[in-house]
Image (cartoon, rainbow, N blue to C red; front, side, top):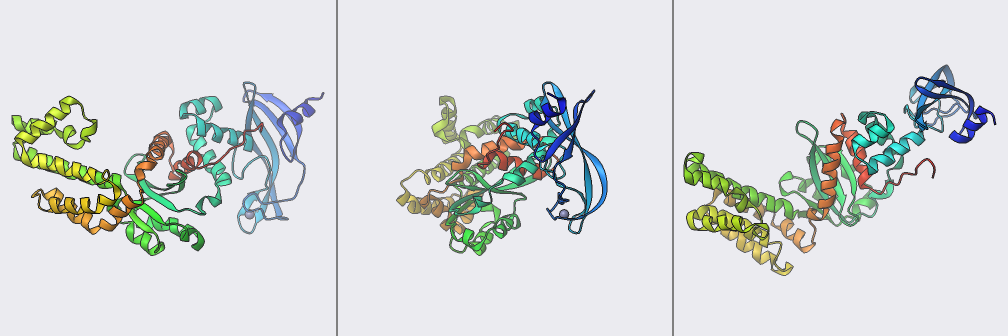
Length: 406
Ligand SMILES: [Zn+2]
């Protein structure tokens, strides 16, 4: 069998035939010719364009044994009215990519399964390049239908990279996957999501759970007048924890900070005050008992937080009464942070109770959130939010990548 025939059979590059095979220090270089010469723009698919010039282009392909393999082909650059000067389309590679489809699909498949250092070592390319590959593969595979028939949604933000950059993720409570992600964390970011939905897609949404403090409510009621806004329990309890901690700090300041014995002790009680007593050790519970004896204000702050937790544990039909009682107590508590929190929660009462009635909690998406945080950590080396978003879609939607042999 001739070498060219052997390589034709082995590589099976669609739309190409092997002209020549050479071995160099870099690896195996396979020169191919195009079978059809339709002059199709690689940017937009426009046909029958005028040829500007010709250039040899090179793509990294799957390794052959331990050697890197490169495909080389002379391409015509076309004058496209829409895209400017663009090389012609080839079947074995995505537009603008320096890798073949097979190589990119393998890289994306690995990115779904493995950690960063293993992939870069196995494929012998940089992590930044993997990020760019994932962006291209996801653009090819992302299911447009994922925005159809959504009913219950959860909106959350994660911080990523250095500095305070945020990413908004919209998740589907029913499927448990991410349906949309974009940089930012304000009402305008969320509006970007609604702008992508058709009227039919909007009409199926019945509830959205959000963080109370983020000001998304207006955007939701404007875009989805029929949907119920729900304030996520996790965030409500988080606000309660913050209020308790503010009470603790005020008491610490009041008692000479860490210069006095009582001040130091207050500092040390933080964990016992904030953690759910159901998850505390005997020693931590003993600290709580001591708080009860020695500092009434601090203990009241602790009780208010716990009573707020209880709101989500009483039978659903008792929740309105429980909330009413909590609001009354918090308002009269003489603890400023809780008086303020009571005011906030009273303003958002309907949404707090709706989350309970509909059992809509972003806590149910916690597994998803920790996965996203892990991905964001892995994506630390990416310079663009686009690459992080693409890797979230790759790993948190149902994208199925076929391996080259499939
Ligand atoms: Zn074009």
